[in-house]
Image (cartoon, rainbow, N blue to C red; front, side, top):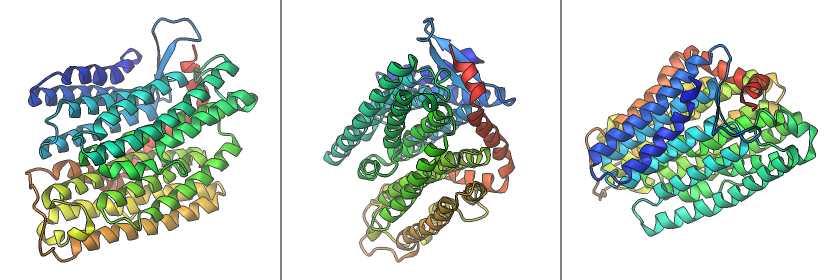
Length: 484
């Protein structure tokens, strides 16, 4: 199975180049589906093959140590491949239903994004992590500027400028680590930050760069300034993959290189709490669905790194569970916003109203996803947040636990704001003409089913999440598998 791991990244990337020159949209859709299925299938196989706590690893390129290109998959990496593939497929389906995948850039950009996300998830050395994230940046810029409007180009400029700065910090950190340790392989670097000041500083720079990619406070402002201006299906795709690659990389780098150092975990908990609060408060003054959801994306990232700051197996397991269900929920919410924009002509709350009567199915999908985001029982968001708070209290991290509870209530208030203005209020006297399309709600409906299933049958994911947490915590096994 190990020898097939590179195909999870290579297949989408190679087929992205192919579909970029294919004129027939039907052919592009078929090719894209094949690439997505390949990536997701390898993820499923990886999850099944690592059930005993093992790690699949391979060395590429035929280079001698320490220059061998290492790729590895444990349960955590395999699970993320499955989730990234699912989100990519549903977002492209939404683009097709809305008629927004006519340009080859749509399929090529989405497949390149998936390939880069898979590569970043599987890579086992810091330099190749940098390379994959740069491919991610390039493909995301292609997607964010589809349509070529002035607002999208401006949003793309803000996005790229900020992330290029983060990339410069990332590369400086990798260079310092290599100059100090003589390797960027994660197996060689296991726990190295504790024994070397140079490695600690370099790895800290890498973590700061990944914080930029993940939109953690105080390096978060680029996200709410760029995401609302992208095409709606692209915003949904970014919510499910782009910033989450940064989170996946943070989980890997912090657990391996810093090996659970107490001081690092305390700093992460502080950043997590501030990120939760700033993100949810930023949503208060917004007047469009996508703007509100973009700020909430920042807030919810705080919950994800909270799990990393707790650092216990219970905390990491809760974080993995939260990550999987959150990707589904937030992507569904953005797809709902896209459906509203398509059918009603706008997602501005001041121009909407009465959708619960006009489009009850759309209202139901929004309500389920919104409740899951806020953590209302019996949905998966409630299960995940209770587990996170319990892990925090068990680890004596009472401050971050209380913050998580308070922010959940504020999140619910923001969702109620959208509900009251767009769904429950009276219909506008002069509605903006929309473009109703059959089946537009299907992708969001599929994702909205996830929090119901994972809430009612949480044990099935908990088993996998616990395995993923143990694979993250057992850095000796991972390091032994990937070291040249």
